[in-house]
Amino acid sequence: MAPRTEITRFLAFFLFAFVALLCIYHGTQSDSLRLTTYAKRSLPDDATIQPRLDLGTELHLLSKRAPPKNRAEAAEKGRGYMCQLESIEPIDLDSELTDLQTFNNDWSPQPYGVSNGDPTETGSYISVALAAKGLPINIGDRGLKGLIYEQNQEYKVGNSYYEPTIGYYKATISTKAGYISAEDNISPAYRLAETRKGNPPPRISRLSDVYFLMWKEVAGKSEAELKNIKYFVRHHVINGASLDVALEVASGKPLPPTKEDGSRDTSMVEEWPGKSYDMSTDDGKAILGTPNGAGVARFLMDHKQELGVKAPSKVTLFKTTGHTNADTNQPEDWIHFLFEISPVHKKKRRGRK
Image 1: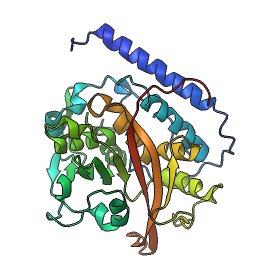
Image 2 (image 1 turned 180 degrees about the vertical axis):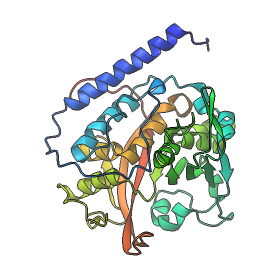
Image 3 (image 1 turned 90 degrees about the vertical axis):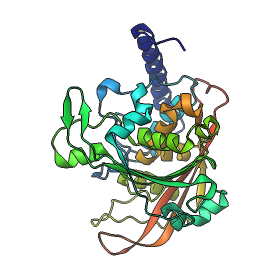
Image 4 (image 1 turned 135 degrees about the horizontal axis):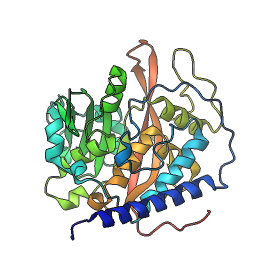
């Protein structure tokens, strides 16, 4: 491949920005949604996925907007993501963001804590769903691995060094089965917001980039396994904006205000097999447009050159019961998103649906 010059980089970015603006335009021009915009609620729970903070390397023109407040806003964002996902044009990412050596300079692996042959965290809680899809449950089955990476190293941004953020990402991955589950994560940006120090995050810090590098590590030298992404699970969704949208999708009507203790009525969500929403529907796009869905979209969108041009084809929304809230010690249900991913065979047709 010929080396990129400043001119080709500028042209590539200009082309991508033009496509993104078209995506935004066609999303906002859609006639398919005519839903009321509801009063804004306080949504401080953004630990699961952070917006891109470095404006100099911002690649997603849709992602700088605030988290969606309701189904209508989430569906608009989801339409924009699908438009970009279905474009065959790859994103010109800085090579450092896909380099395992750069990643390992700032992040350290931690023990997952589950022995070979025992179920992963995801496998312990949604084994019925995984079995129904033919996905591995136990460590070692079809190469299933548990990974935890912690940002516990001093890191450099520009000419300055910064202390570790202690952000972390936890996942279980089988590239042979084409499956990844995002089990737990607190981003460096969220940790930095807690400390209010104003430090920039490490170069590699976003969920989509870290999980891609975990995926790449497990795939090793197998290009076939690297491209074999078929399922992406958002296990135990706790993000408030994501939950509000998912519950509105499941109920088919506006939600009442969240209770003072932060609990939500999840009675409208079914246990497995739950309910599946095709990405051709506004409900499917709404779940993709949540903060938790955005992590899946960006994982695929940012890494087309390595993963191929792929997009979610549908998402299954379901819950598990019998859990206890760690803060209130009260019973609670857990909400899960299971995205199924397929290759994109042709460009999406421009224009209104």
